[in-house]
Structure formats: C-alpha cells, structure tokens
Image (cartoon, rainbow, N blue to C red; front, side, top):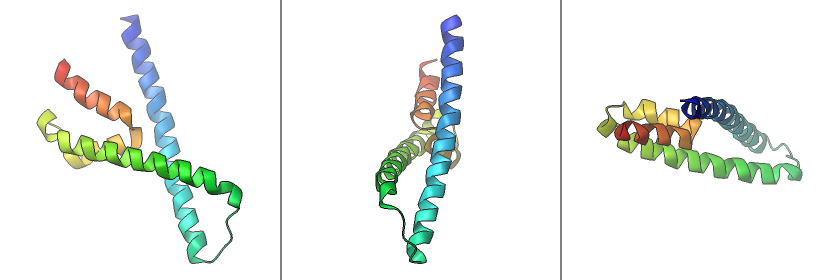
Length: 102
C-alpha cells in the first residue's frame, strides 16, 4: 500500500514537471521562430538547449501518437489521450497500458 502511494506521488511530480518543461519548450520554439522571422540574432549558446527541447518534443510527439493509436482499444478518446500523453510523456503511456493489466 505504501509503495503504491509513493508511486502515485512520484508520477504526479513527474507529470507536473513534464507539463511545465514541455510548455516551456513550446514557448522557446515559438520565440525562436519569431526571432528567425524578424531577423533577430539568437545567442549561439542557446543552440544546445534548442536541440535538447526539439528532441524531447519529438519523443513526446511519438508517445502521443502511440497513445492516440491505442486509446480506442482502452475505451479512451484518442485525441484527448494523445494530447495528454504528449504533455506528460511516458507516464501517460504507462497509465494507458496499466489499465489493461488491472
């Protein structure tokens, strides 16, 4: 019982952190696109951060697609669960596939 409670707290913490980081990376990418459109110079020190956030968003996007594909067989709405999984990441997939096991 205590282990399940600790797992739920950990999952909640990871979900909150993931939502904040993905929202921040979306904002960072929008600001980068704006800088390119307005011919504003972006510091080159931010290039590694841009690549990390693009990689994370690509992985989350793939997880969202997988969740949307498998959601109907788990009686979930595909678009809604795919979006949820995009923001929370692997935890969303774990929750989706854990429902089948219970």
